[in-house]
Length: 231
Image (cartoon, rainbow, N blue to C red; front, side):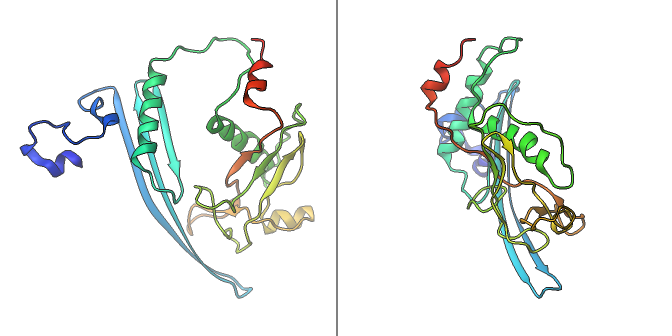
């Protein structure tokens, strides 16, 4: 869009571009993705509840060779500073070395740890799936699913059944704690609904699903964690 606005009059196509973008033009191994939109929902039920919600979202990603870094957000603006961070991280990953093919102890970045918590700890505690996730070994591990945190991609105030959003502890001190549920699964288990019945749109049947899945901070500092790895 930048080059289209400048047209053919631009003698230097990189003139005026931010520093992070100047090295990307003309490269056949770089792809940049951007999306933004707004989802609006209107909900009415037999309890007399009328709800109107607006969900702004945005997504930015840089794929540089085999390395890809993305910046998903909810209602936060994707500013040039955060975009530059993504581009620089993608470049660093492109020149990084591959990890050893062995069973190793690792310290994960917050984004990666959150992804694993969402897929394993989150979906494993969906009331309509109920995977047997076992008992995590570390008693310091606590995972929560919290749609009430403002301005995140998975945030909302009410689910698709009109139930208020609730923060739910999934794993508490290393042990499975509560299930995410809908009105149906809550009735089946004898629990109260906790606002996690979600749908991609009115054409789709709502199902129990995660929102913002987080691993809460433990007692150790980063230097202690690194010092405890012998690999």
